[in-house]
Image (tube, rainbow, N blue to C red; front, top):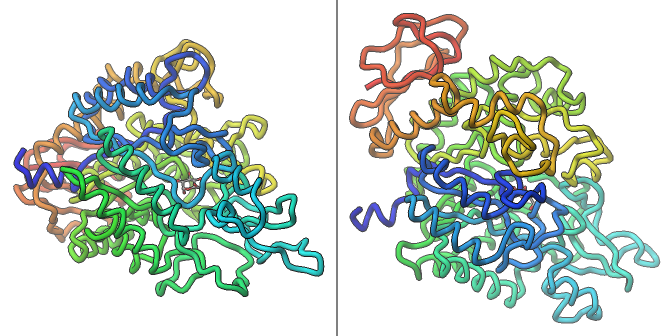
Length: 542
Ligand code: GLC
């Protein structure tokens, strides 16, 4: 590799997200661990991914699946040790796979030594200044400082015994940090160096748009707090311009390394504001969740793709494409439910334990395969979520008593939460936890998991696993400059484009088969109908 491509490895990388507790369990305690991932490095190499992104593996009480971090520079003992991490990183690197880790800077856990110290310290102390403590309102201060709700439901403020309140935009176990505090800023730079020195290649930045807040009193009246995406940076809690000063400091740290460490922002912001997170002076890349939110529809896909390629040209970053992650309903399930009001239908389906409305599993999977093959042909980097290479559907069957996501409890049962996409992976057709570990898994796996396991799919050339393997191998060969040209003429329900070098991708979003374009067929997401491309199918040609 020349030095330019060495530095730019991330631009068109396929990044595979691992949710460590649900990937592979090496010691039979029902929780996936780092050694479990190490044993599966050959699987990742055979799949053909360029990088792995590890969701948090730090010590944590799991109040929010590990996004409540007790110590940013250690490994949860249930998941392993720092030396297990080093082994995993070494195994991935020797398989040619980069390592990206998740960094959670908006909040610590309530078990972090800083928060314990803050609770033990008096009002107005330096220890409290690392977080966001305020006096209450009302005659005796028994009302919260402001009317804000947390994203997981319930008030965003919690009262401590001496009467002060602290801010938590997520669960009460996730107190928000005060990023105006110099010690907080210094400590995160230390953490970035700690992991970069251990060979980590990049960082995924959790809630990247939340760190800078306008907390000048009187605090704003907001009532509900969601990820409000304003076009002008005027929200007191999200996407304020000052946040970029923090990432400019981080960029200096990233650039101390060769190749520079990379970062990708999780920033639920107005599309016009995403580019600053993605700028080379900032984090360098930002997730684009628009495809994930789009209907399976040619017009919707084309609009998102066009906008994002324009945006990438302007920032100098590469586009990021995502259909699934640990926070959303898996895409085969989204595409297999009636399209009416997507969010509401999906929520209703989850609440009915996966029974109503009826999920069309085959249709959902067909569309998911077509959408994935399209996504993998786009210029830029592709972020895949563990299990999507098996075509896994969301697990709808989870009963309320097994749910772990704080969203369920804190919304009073209104939202079932995100456990359905976090059920441990099936590796084998049978056996305890379908090969996830020697014993049961920490979330119950449905009986249909055996038939979609890695073992069941590896020998079936028509399986989704084999499709992903073939697609990733072909993509490596075909990869080209970060541009595409649309080919018109297929009608409003067909998307057809070429990449430099003659790589063609065509998707039929319609209801009847259409003629395949000229060219040599390389791969298709489903069976073809002679020389015609059936509905809900993508083909690659050269
Ligand atoms: C991000 C994570 C999500 C987590 C939240 C709070 O959105 O992706 O899983 O619950 O941040 O840390």
